[in-house]
Length: 316
Image (cartoon, rainbow, N blue to C red; front, side):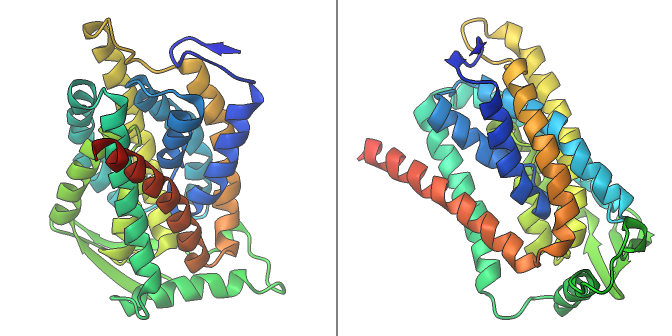
C-alpha cells in the first residue's frame, strides 16, 4: 500500500506488527512506544519530514486508550497527577510543534535531536538500575508489596482485588497519596514546570511526553512504577490529541512542507499499539519493575548511540 504523506510503499501488516511489539514492552512503564516508533519510521521507512512527528501523535491517540482503560479498571490511575501533567504539558506542545517546523525540519538536525533525547532517557533509567538503594525506600517497599501477591501462583487476583491508589490530599501545593501501605508526597509546582519542558520536547519529537516524564516520575519524584505508568499514559493521550490538532492547523501555512499527519499510517500503527498496550498493561503486574526498566533502557540507548554517532560523523 502507498502512503502519500510519508511517500512510502509497505505491506499493511508491517506497521501493525511493529507497533504491537514495541508497545507491549513500553506500556509496562507507562510509555506508549512512540519514542521508539519514530526512529523506526525515520531509519527503516525513510519518513523524515515534520509529518512524522504528527503521525506519531496519531499513533498515540489510537493506541493509548487500551492501556489507559486497564489501569483505570485496576484502580491505579491517579487523576490529580494526570491533571498536573496535562496542564503543564499542553502549552509546551504548541511551542514544540513550531520549533520542529521552523528549526528542525532538516532530517539530519532532527536526527541529532532525537539521539540526544533518547540518550538522556536511557541514561536516566540506566542510572536508576545501577543504584544499589533507592532515594525513597518507600518506593521500593510499595513495588515489592504490589509484586508479592501477583507472583504467588496460589493466589490469583482479579482487577478489583489489586492494591489501589488512595489520594489523601490534593491542592495547589502538594499531592499526597497511599499505595500498598506506603505514603507518598510530591510538590505540584515543580512537576508542572517539568511538564511544560516535557511538552516542548514532546511537541518537537512527536510523543505525548510519557516517555520523558515517566522516568522523572519514577526517579526524581520517587513514584512507584506501578503508579506512574497509568498517569504517564493518560497524559500522553491528552497531549497527543492536542499535538495532532496543532500540526493539522499549522499545515496550511507551510504548503511546501509535509506537516499534517499521514492518517492511514498513523491508524495502522495505532491499531497495533492499542493491542500491544492493552496486553502490556495487563501483563505489567506479573513483571518485576527492574526488568521493565532494563528492557526500556536497552531499547532506548541502542538507537540513541546510532543517531548520535551518525550525526557526529557528519559534523566531523
